[in-house]
Length: 172
Image 1 (cartoon, rainbow, N blue to C red):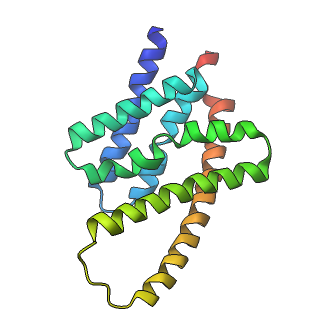
Image 2 (image 1 turned 90 degrees about the vertical axis):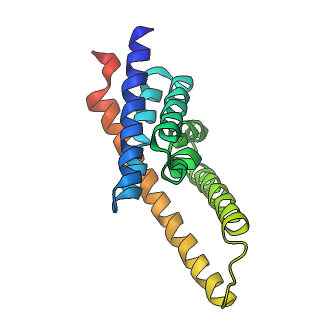
């Protein structure tokens, strides 16, 4: 039990540090947010989904309380923090095409919800000049984001495989 708590604290701190640096550094933010999801996956491998979710909740809460900037922790809170747990359950299907479709569905739901909140709450009063150009660019951005998500998922899988083969702590 004490081992689980110690690892949970370490992995929560690592996630928090990555979110912190993503919030203050001028570049490389997306990479840091992506990397902040790895400790949750490591906790999942070591101690299960409930422990991984506790790392997500602790790191997200610390980010909210200590950073004072909600914008810095939003990407972690709405996607990167819990993605490893969602990925774990989606990959239990064991059908690669269906897994990819379910992951893309999850990503697109988060993307659509984020867009809806952004457009309706944050820029509702801004006059939009050329709506047709916005729709074209929006389609291009969504396609690029989906491609980036597929690359992220592949890299995430490779990192998890490396961790399981070379670094897993419970084998020690």
